[in-house]
Length: 148
Image 1 (cartoon, rainbow, N blue to C red):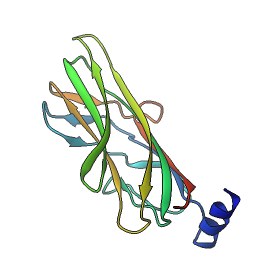
Image 2 (image 1 turned 135 degrees about the vertical axis):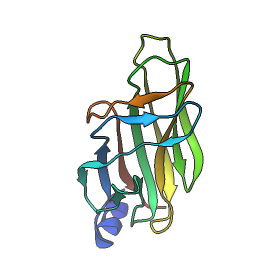
Image 3 (image 1 turned 45 degrees about the horizontal axis):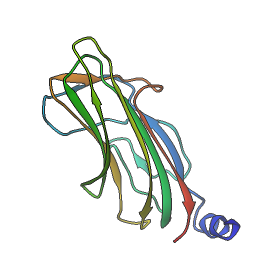
Image 4 (image 1 turned 120 degrees about the vertical axis):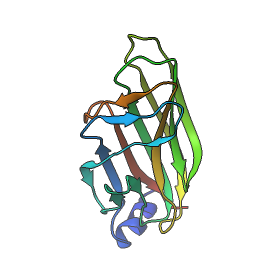
């Protein structure tokens, strides 16, 4: 494993990031809505675009990606989806009622090519809703684990 990290360091460092949504975001019922992860806690290789809300690493290899999303108000069903290159690769689902404030979270180990692969977070709720915009409630993190 040390060789993988040395290789990554020679290519500009082993990328890692932590981002979150800093404001509530409206979610239209039954519509995939990209989560506006617009604030960085850190981004070691400057690979997270806070305008496009996507992560495109600059080192090829395997990445551990984790996420969490809270909705503001009750709903029937909601799904939080992690997309790679525009396609859903994993998701988490929550069921609620009119008074719940549900959370969805997940984690996955994925390969990314270090140049064109990117990831984004989406939410789809069964009713009009909004995400919580707080660093401890709606966030995504990722880190380089090893080269291929």
